[in-house]
Every structure is written in C-alpha cells, then in structure tokens.
Amino acid sequence: MARQKMSGFLELVTVDKALEKIKGSINLSIEVEDVPLSECVGRVLAEDILSPIDVPPFDRSAVEGYAVISSDTFSATPTNPIELTVIGKSEAGQEPTQIPKVSSGKAVEIFTGAPLPDGADAVVMVEQTKRVGDKVLIYSPVAKWRNVSKQGEDFAKGKPLLLKGTRMKPWHIGALASANITRVKAYRKLRIGILSTGSELKEVGEEVKLGEVVNSSKPMLTALIKERNCIPVDLGTVEDDLDKILERLRLGLEICDIIVTTGGTSLGEKDLMPEAVQKLGSPGLLVHGVAMRPAKPTGAGVVNGKPIFILSGYPVAALVGFEVFVDEIINFLYNTKPEPKPKVRGRLTRKLATQVGYRCFVRARVIPSPSGYLIEPLKLTGSGLLSSMTKANAMIVVEENVEGFDEGEEVEAYLIQPIEAPL
Image (cartoon, rainbow, N blue to C red; front, side, top):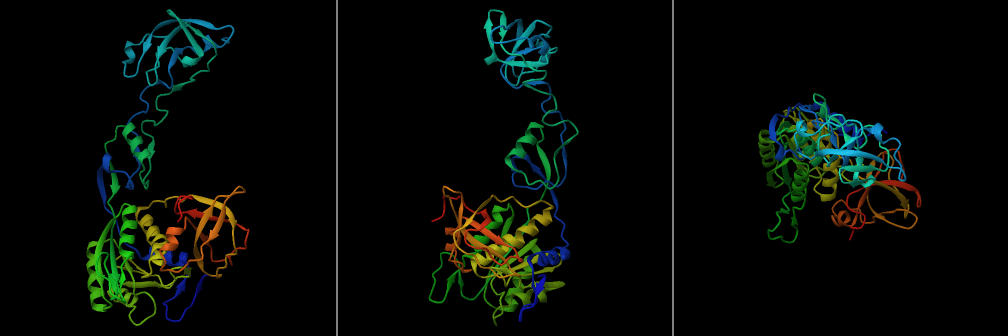
C-alpha cells in the first residue's frame, strides 16, 4: 500500500515515500575539514585515502623462531630432525643490512616483527625447534613464506586504505597510524538544532506545577545527536505561538544544517508546527503524517535546502521518528551507510497484531531459553511511556505488508540493549 489519505493530515505516506520526498528537496553541501588523527574517531571521510607506504615496509617474521630456507626443512620429523647452523640474530628494529644472509644449511634466530633475512623464505616457530649450541634442530617442515608477513601485505603503497564515506572506528585510526598518516579530510560535524514547543513544558530541574510536564525529549534528542557525533544546538522552548515559533525556526535555518522540533505536530488547534514550516519558505512542508506506529503525526519539510523534522511531543514517538528519519538524512548528507544493528531471531511469546499499511516499531524483550531466544512484545506501548524503552532490549520492525505474527512464530528483532539488561 503506497499511501493513504487521512483527514487533517497533508498526506499519510509510507516511510520510504517520505524519505524520498525529503532527500529529493535537500540542497546542502557539507564542508570538508582537515582533521588530526587524534580527533578522527566518529568522523566521516570526505575522500579516498591511498596508503603512502607499504605496510609492513619489509618482509618480517610473524612469530618467534628461526628464519630458514623452507626446502631445507622438508624432510624434518619429530623423530628425525634437521640440523641447521645458527649464524646470527634478527630483532625488531634492527637494520636489515646488519642481519646475515641465510644460505642452505643455515638459520637466523628471529623475533616477532623482526626483518626477514635475505635468502630466507620461511620461519620455523620456536616451539618446533631445539637449540643446541650454535645448532638448531628442526622437528617439523615449514612451507614457503610460512609465518612471514610480506611487505605490503597489510596495505600496499598506492592502494586504497580507506574509502570516502567511511565513518571512522578505532581500528580505522590504527590503520591510518600504521601508514604514518597524521591528518585526513573529513566532513565537518553537522549542526542539528532542537526546538521544543508547548506552553506546558518545563525544563529539567525547574519546578513543575499541576498540568505542566518536564521536557524529557530535549535532553534525549541532545544525547542522540551527540551519539551520532554531530553538534546539538538548543533553539529553546517556546509556547504555542506561531510568531515565536517562526522566529526560532528562522534562527535555526541561519545557524544549523538540520532542525528537529518536538510537539505541535498533530491536528489540534495548538499544533502549529506544520503551518510554521509551510510559512517559512519553499518548498516548505513536504510530509505531515506517516504510515508508521508510533510517530504517525511526524512531519518534515525543506526550507533553503535544509531539512526540518517535526517530531511528536511524546518522547518514544520522537525517538522512533529521529531514528527513522533524522538518522537516515544524517547518513545521506555524509554519503555514508547506516551503522549496523545487532539482530537476533526468536519465537514470539504471544500473538503480535499490527495494522497492514503501517510500518510498526514494537518494543520487545529478548529472553534466553534452553531452546533458543524468546521474544516478548511489551504490553506497555504508549508513545509517552519511556519506561517501555528502559524495559525493552529489542525492537521488532513489522513491515507495511505484514499483518502481525502468531504466537510461536519466529521473528527478527534488533537489539537496543544487552539481552541481560532490561528492568
């Protein structure tokens, strides 16, 4: 089912159609920065990186033992070892020119990471040898290039080391360091504005009177943005007043790349955010109402090439809306792939009913059992119940063309917490 009409909403569209509309209207170029290696983790590469050197820069031993000519060892057995004369030693950091050349019948004692002597083509592990004076007994044959890390085996000079769009992890930093690279070109961090609306909202730590609520969505969204290695920008909390909302949105468009708002997105008299986005400029409001649960009232628009996301005032719906839409656009702007999510399969502990035509995000608990994982859909499912997220350790995504699952049916869920963690 591609789209549905719903009275009051601009158009109730599928998640995929909504993303297509948003991406098609964005016109935003993210500048490139020169970033030192110490600050690279979490950043997205803006160019391919070719290795400037061979890594390792020379043939080196992968183990401790004896560098030999492999053909000298072919007849070695535990009961009939081969005897070779030890003519020297190769240690890590030693100049290769200081190491004697290996010829037939000879061996060089060698340590892990040390240069392979000229003439040698393999290393016998020390566990398969016995030293007797200046001789070494070899108890097992070794194949050519066995226990040797060849020059350029890890990274070859002039070949790709990392590709544009890579979101750098600690092991990527290690790879760059091994190639003696100190700085890289990366996209600057996106600035994401957060605007909360609602006359009833109070900030964390303020006195909350009857009828007022703590603005839990703002610190949650701030944390989500920081977790994505972007920069959160607090655009404030405003009452349900169109002019004040427009003022903050205009400020956000000047200083931010993306704006995320919470509240004012449903169909009530004080739900002013869709109107505000439409008034801001062209193309304005693109989406209002998405065939998903939770977060059906989610809206989105683009103004001056920059995306604006209108998320629900309910924190769970805001969280789902952020992960479905804002995450996707962050990756789109960086031209990178989404972070992989760990997934498990298990049998449902009860029937799970969902509505065809909607993409449903069901909070669940994965429970280990002797026969495999059990997956229990939580009964607390309200969009405002953050306890449902603290109690869950997984999320089941039910696609639009599926009408739920029966008890005992195997389903897939992605983990949001360790399996042992739920309260």
